[in-house]
Amino acid sequence: MFRPALRTWKPVKFFGRRSVSLSNTRGRISFVLPTSTVVAGLVGIGSAAYAYGLGLGNGRAAVSTHNAPLSKPKYSGPEEAQQAIKALEAALPGQVRVDPVTVEAYGFSPHTYLPSSPHAVYVAATSTEDVIKVVNISRKYKVPIIPFGAGNSLEGQFAGHPAGSICIDLSGMDKILAIHEEDGDLICQAGARWDEINRILEEKGIPLFFPLDPGPGSTIGGMIGTGCSGTNAVRYGTARAEWFLNVTVVLPSGEVIQTRRRARKSSAGFDTTKLFIGAEGTLGIVTEATLRLAPIVPNKVAMAQFPDVARAVDAVQEILRTPYGINIQCVELLDDNMINAINKAGTTRKPYPTRNSLFFKIQGAPEVISKAAEVLETIVKKHASSRFEFASTEEHAKEMWESRKMALFSSLQLEPGLRCWTTDVCVPVSRLPELVYETKKDLAEHGIKSTIVGHVGDGNFHALLLFKEDDELPKVKDAVHRIVDRAIAMDGTCTGEHGVGVGKKEFLVHELGVGTVKLMRTIKRAIDPDDLFNPGKVSLRFETGCTLISLPYR
Image (cartoon, rainbow, N blue to C red; front, side, top):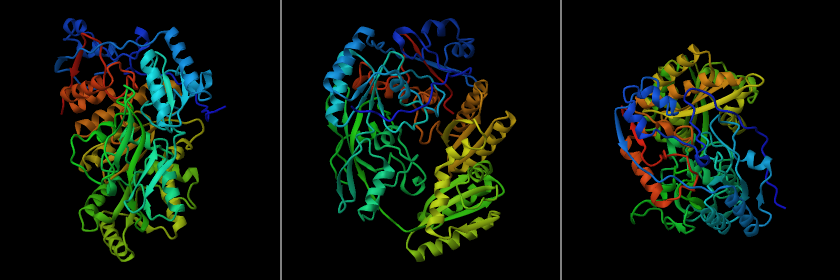
């Protein structure tokens, strides 16, 4: 009998004045503002919008409306759902579970405080053929289907649907199917984990690696779905670069497609691979991917410390503009609070001074690293760095970098019983010091403990807001929304790499504009007319006769 690895977290209720409205209309999540309400109450649209859960506060106002009717999804009732479960058990014996512990655990995350529900049924997929069977049953009985990978996404991407949903767990589809060392690529299933892929390549003596490095244990399917990046992004880019050459996708119709061949480049038609990057399983379920690999280049790890974030970022900008900027593989910002958390977690051999810090990886041939290091040291000292040092050994370098990758867990260990709401935004690099300064000031004024880490070469930073009690959630939630509003006002984005899920979708119109969101919804409707694939995530869904509100673009 197949037994999934059960998670022990419990569902957490969502609090706060911007909380998502939950509608009992056939159990679906609703982000609805009826046209009649808009017509009757345009003068008081801010308060009316709050009443319907859209949360247009913090000085944001509606400036125009756009009628955008969509058919209301019709999901199964209890009888059809039971028929679907029986069909799944017949089609995939030993791979289906309906016990309350499993369906609840796979519908909730311990790292978010967003609306969710238990699934109706859990299915462990082992192949593309399994996924096709589940999709066909989902379509026949009109039961929403939600893919699950590592379970470490942070914006409610795998949250259960209130109508009752099928959780399809792809984490068991973790095989590397082919390695083409001579071509610098490999083919793997969607449940393969990036760090495990790199471990296997190293074990086989293949001098290549996959450079996208989000949270430890992230699966390839989840990385595609959220449009991830990681600490290597300053040198290697993000998931939206050419690291995914081709993906195999099961569409809502049950049809299987491959988006490209294995060639390094192609100008044949639309780039359909990118259609699924960042779509979070709303358009199709990725089951296999062809990954482009990069050669392993020697690197050295260094750390510099600064009196403030502004001088640290200024130093990075100057470094990246030099001829040796191309040799910076990673450059990570850790604020003084995060350094304190790392020290208390005891993940390093000796504590660091509690100052705003940059962690670098410098790559290249030994003589190039040596010259780049000289330039880097000169520039950081020019910007008032109080400390600059290289890792003394390979083990020391690994320890330094692991301490950065474990930022969330170190933050949670600052005090017993701490919980964390983590969010990410991204702005033009020149605006990052202002954004971090205003955010830290805002959080201190509201009495919210926090740590900050950032991919400073990209203008992307993560704020980890720490609290203990449920009654603190409203002010934490409001602080997250102020961070996002602040980033968008700086011509940035509501999410640099965590994705949209449930938590960020209310900002899409504000960031992208009505036309872009309308286009996203048009694509969704064309591919998934029954709205069965991860419904309620990424793009806003409205009932017929409702109005899409356009907020100030800049």
